[in-house]
Amino acid sequence: MAERVGILVVSYGAREVAMIDAFLRSTNYNVEVYVADKQRNPFNAKNAKAHVVIPDLNVEAICKFAEAHKDRIDFGIVGPEKPIIEGVRDLVEKRVGIPMICPTKEYAIEASKVQQRLLFQEAVPEVNPRFKIFRQEEFKTAEDARKTLYKWLDELGNMAVVKPDKPAAGKGVGVWGDHFTTREQLFEHFWENLRHGAVIVEEKIEGEESSFQAFCDGKHLVPLPETRDYKRAFDGDKGPNTGGMGSYKDAGEILPFMTAADRERELRIVNKIFDKWRASENNALRGIPFYVAFMHTGKESKILENNSRPGDPEIINILPVLKDDFVDVCFKILDGNLTRVEVEKAATVVTYKAPPSYGGYAEAFPELVEKTEINKPVDLTKAYELSKKYGERICVYPASMEIRNGETYALKSRAVCVVGISETIEDARNISLEGVKAIKGGALWHRTDIASKQHIEKSIRHMEALRKRK
Image 1 (cartoon, rainbow, N blue to C red):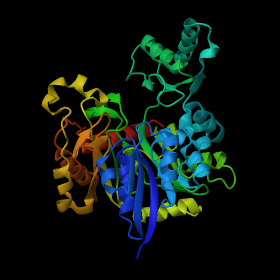
Image 2 (cartoon, rainbow, N blue to C red):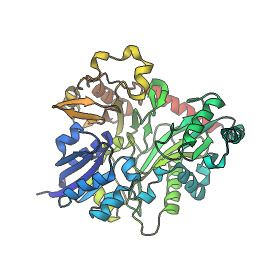
Image 3 (cartoon, rainbow, N blue to C red):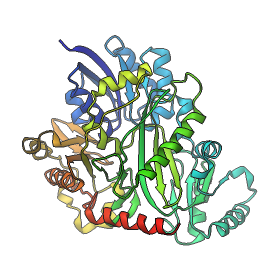
Image 4 (cartoon, rainbow, N blue to C red):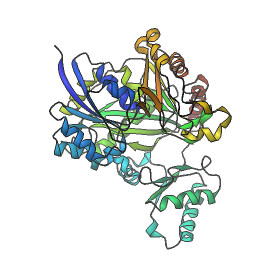
């Protein structure tokens, strides 16, 4: 008889559905999940022992839900950044006594881009692009700020990235050449952000991006295979940045455009930051405190940002191919003795479908939006039926979706993703796309070039050219 384990999951979308799916595949435990959810997600509502909807993922409400089921819950795990930043772990552990897998509030470095840059400057200054921190109180007038900013832009040759210190403050990250092409446009973006707090203006780095993730038990860092995320809304990396329209990983640890030396450099950098940052005997960093966006330049690697949570979609590439029982992995994280994780040697491709309101799609392609389908139910049946053909080589994970009167509706964000798993990226991509195309209704759309051969070859050629510039 398998041991019963109760797990609290704080859920936002498909990332947490992938976690719950990994828990439910456990062969060592009889798993009960208790889900504090942003919406009435169809997968979670069906599979949870208890399910509550908390639209703002308020930490007090999460804590009350944990308290109501504390006798059945052995530990909790958190996916989304907001409750981590707001101290859900500190609150639940103190008030309810349930151990939580995510960093404490103090170590949620995602809360401040300024704090990140200053930490990196201390631990590994070479990973920082050139940057300058601006605060509103430093300037008497907008004209003073403009002069100071333009002087910095002279040094950067205008190749700048504007970042608000806090997540979801102001107008978000803006990039020269993508979001603005004149200094006036850049200043407007900068000034709007400055009204909400500190702003970093840093050098725009040319290269190819990879996502590094590592499980952490507070003492050890256990790196996971590299993934590549697709932030831009539309094919060909056009359109605004999104939460990520899809991602891929190769069968091995690195991506096709990376070298073993690139990977070694990443490991060295993240371990340096870890060693600098953690306190002795400190478990405050347990979970995935290092989800790092690296930019490979052909010379040194730069860090664009670090997050204190699992990536969405990047962790969705990993969880379906974990060889270890995910419940055991979590117990080892809590015990402080996680030293390795086995991952199947398989390529995975994640493709998201989103509603027309997401990523500016309805405005960019009005002729492609099927008005008759908007606000109509979404049918996932045919996608789920592909498991008869592919078995565990396909996973369908609802994200920003909810059950209403027995039917599934897409909400405002990325609605559902399909993971394809195979020996090669190309085969995994074909499975993912087949699943995505089988999802009908809701006028949902997707990028068609996630992990395409052309996109990967372009990245390889770009890195080859950058390495020759040394």
